[in-house]
Length: 352
Image (cartoon, rainbow, N blue to C red; front, side, top):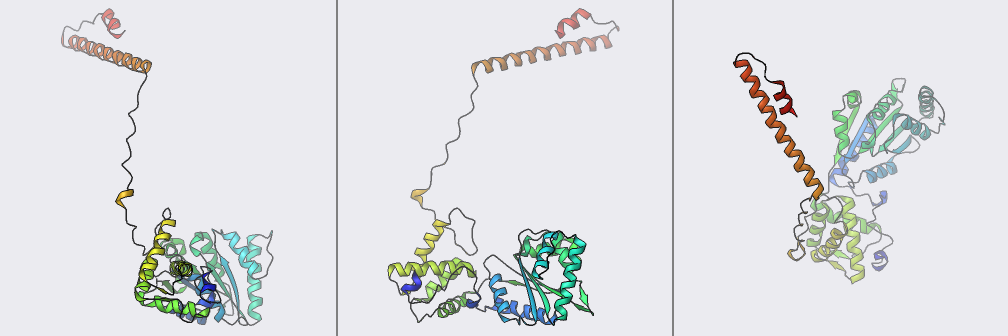
C-alpha cells in the first residue's frame, strides 16, 4: 500500500468518514456555527444539506466529538425510506425502550416517558437523522409531533436533519410540513471546497498520518485535483488516494499535473458507464475509435400469402365503395325525380 511506501501511519485519503481527519473549510465552519447555535437554543430543527460526498457525515462525527455526553443523550438514525411507525420504534430504541407489539399510542407514551426520565437526570435529548431526503412526508410530520413534547415549558427533544439538496425541496414544497418549517431555527447548505482550500486540506490529512513532506504536489497538480473533483471532498479523496498509489508504483515523490492526468484518465475509463460527477471535464473522443453509424434495419417483408390476402381485401373495399356511390346516386335521383322507389333488385345487386 502507498502508506507504507511513503512512511505514513495510515491512509490519509480513505473514503470512509473519520472525524479525526476533520478539516474546517469555510462552508464547514459556517455549518458548525449553525449547529452550535442550535445546540445552545435546545429546541426546534437544524437542517444541513449537501451533495453526496460533501462531508455531512464527517460533520456530524466531528460534532459528536465536541459535545458533552454527560449533558446530552444522542440518538442517531440513518434513514432508508423509514415510514412513520418504523421511525417511532427506532426513536424508542434509541431511548432504550422496548416498544415491540405496542400500538402507536402506547409507543408515543413510552417515548414521552423516556424523554422525561432523561430530562430528570439532567440531560437533554438530541435526535440526529442522516440521509433525511429518504424520509416520507408522513415520517417528517411524525418528527414534528415528537418535537412538541415539553416539560415545564422546555422542549424534551431537539432534532438535526441532514440530507441531500432535494431534501430542501421536500421541506419547501410539501404543504403539510408548514408547521415543521416554522420550527426550523437554522439551515445551511454545504458547498464544495474552493480551489485555494485544496492544498491545506491535503496537507492536513497527510499530517494526521505522520507526513513529513514526501510525497508533495506542485501547484499545477493541486489545480488538476480541484478541477477533476469539483472541490467535493469524497471525490478529492478518491483521486488523491489513486494518485498516491500511482506514485508508490512509479516511485514518484513530487506529483505534477501530468501525473494527475494519467490517473484521472484511468478513473474516467473505470467510470465510463457511470453517471457524471460534478466538476468533471468531458472525455475527449478519439477519431480513430469512433464507431460507424448503425446500419438501418431492413424493411419488413411480407410473404406471398399475406400479400395476396391484402390485395383481395383492398379489391373488395374498392367494390363496396363503388356500390355505395351507385346507391347514393339512385337515392338522389329518386328524391329529385318523381318520388318513385328505386328497383330493389338494383339495391340488392349493388350491395352484394
